[in-house]
Amino acid sequence: MNNKPTNVRWRILLVLVFASFVSYILRANLSIAAPAMIPDLGVSEVQWGWILAAFTAGYALFQFPGGLLADRFGPRLVLTVIAVLWGLLTIATSLVPGEDSGSIALVIGTLFLVRFLVGATHAPIFPTVGASICRWFPVGNWAFPNGLTSTGLTLGYAACAPLLAWLVTDIGWRQSFLVLAPFGFVAAWLWWWYARNDPSQHAAVNPAEIALIREGRPDVHTAPPRGEWLKVLKNRDVLLLTLSYSCMNFVFYDAFNWFFYYLVTVREFSATDAGLVTSSQWIAGGIGAALGGWICDRLCRSVGMRWGCRLPVVIGLLICGALLIGGSVSTSAQAAVLMLVFCFFFNQLTEGAFWAAGISIGGACSGATCGVLNTGANAMGVINAIAVPVIAGTLGWTFAMAMGGFVAFVGVIAMLLVRADRQV
Image (tube, rainbow, N blue to C red):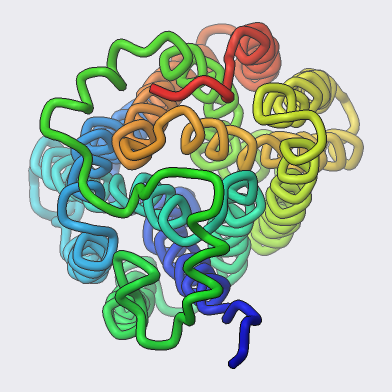
């Protein structure tokens, strides 16, 4: 008899990383296509900020419902359905009316609606990922898998930046979106084919792997009791963790929404060079996410969940904030780029720790907890999309970008009050 655990959980994680990769290709496209779309559609920077906010509003509003769906119906069905919708809505984006429609209100209204739906359908992915990792990985081994899924998202943006910049230049932004859309359908098929809601349902998992996954905790693979999610909304540690993660995400949305545009219009990089620099920033973030998750898991096993989750966040956000301020005020474009690339490395160093803390605090309600976590974080993304162009227009881009560094310092204070070793 073979008592060695199988490794199906790692193959499940590989599919989750791919889904995360695809999600970011199909949501980051608008930010990369912005320099071409803004003049083509005849919209202003402030109007574009509202369009970006539409995605983030849909994304924020459907985080918690997405987590509840993952807890109730299982990650397999939820992720399959939303990945199909990603592909369909990418196609819909390519069909929005242009400036020749005769009505700028129609252009903005249509794109606003489509981007809101794009946000709503992407919203459940990371609560679903959190619920999957909770079901498939042992206690104290959640940060590294979450860090790797964050690496998937950063690599998705890293791939999208130069690829889409080239495609937009070569065939136009509408045709570029049609080229990217099939990735959503591939992710949906792959996840439905291989994933299961619980290790015991997967034919390739042996009893030793199931025992390894379930050691040291009660079963969390069944749906929580009805109404249990209300405790999540009232939990002090969930709310403080959400505040800290929201502050981290303000800096994340500086990179997601504005970095490529900032390089082209403020630092005067060419679109191709900006695509390569943006790609390097997101590759650095991917490395930071994987490394931070690995460090967090080691710390959790050696010093416990409370400080194991706190330390990567506190150190990462302190350095991230300092580098963002330094890069924003630097008069050298090269020095600024270097600092902003490493700023994102330290920003993503915190990802695995945040999600491991959410899973630990949430327990059987981990999907709902991760939904609350990402709701607050992406509500901050709405604020970022609207506030940054307004502040840039009144106080300048230096202040608009540097502001994120001070927000990161607030996240440090909030995380020092979080106890990840105390469950809902």
